[in-house]
Length: 206
Image 1 (cartoon, rainbow, N blue to C red):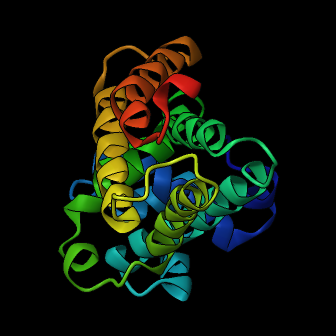
Image 2 (cartoon, helix red, strand yellow):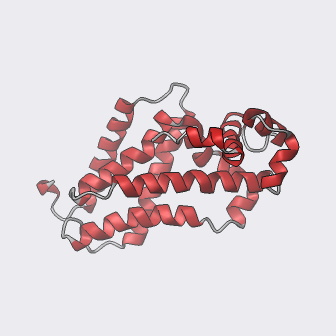
C-alpha cells in the first residue's frame, strides 16, 4: 500500500501533508520544526499557517488524510466474495505491509501520533473509528456466515486485533533493517495460528 505521490506534487496542501509525515517520522514530532516541514514541501514557512493552525493541527490533518487513503484501500481490497478468514488475513497483511512499502507512514501512525498530547486527549479520531469499523465488519460477517464463533464480542475482538497488529507494526518500524514482504507473510502466518484459529468456529475446516 503506497500512498499516491502524484496528487501531493500538484496540490500545495497535499505536499505539506506528505512532507509532515516524512519529517515527523524521521525527526520525531517533538523535535520536528514547522520550518523543516516547509522546506521538505518546498514552500515558505508562513505558507504552512495558511492551511494549519499549528504543529498539532498539522499532525492531526496528516493523520486524517493518510487514514482516509488507508480506509479507502481496505474497503476496495476487501470487497470480494472470499471467505471471511481469507479477508481477515488480507487485512492483517495490508496493515503490516505499510512497514515495507511506506515506512515513514507506518512510523508516523504507530509512533509519532502518540507524542501529541492534543491528539491523545482531545481528538475524537473519526478516521480511526472508521478503520475499526472495517475490521469489526469482517468479524461480524464471519459470525453471521457461521465461519467465526458467536460467543465472542466483535467489538472486543476488534480492539484486541488492532492492539496485536499495532504492536507487531511497532516491532517492524523500530527494526534497524527494512522489513520485507516475506517477513510480513511470516508474521501474518503466526498471527493466524494464534488468533484466527481461536476465532474460527471449526478450526479444522480452514
